[in-house]
Image 1 (tube, rainbow, N blue to C red):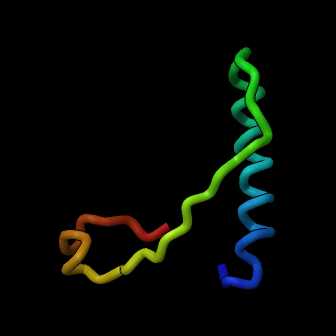
Image 2: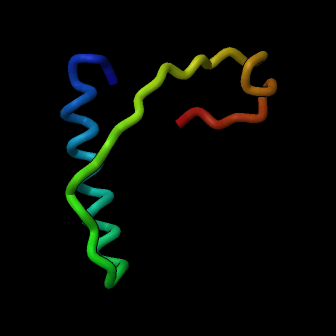
Length: 55
């Protein structure tokens, strides 16, 4: 993922997640979404050594 394709990737993933939520729930789900984007530092010292998952 790059800064250039972040918006498109978020829109695609959001649409898929909202679709799953609508399929599995009888509650209504709004299309309005707010994204909070921050940098994640993958330093082992900051995330507790080897106790993390790389997705």
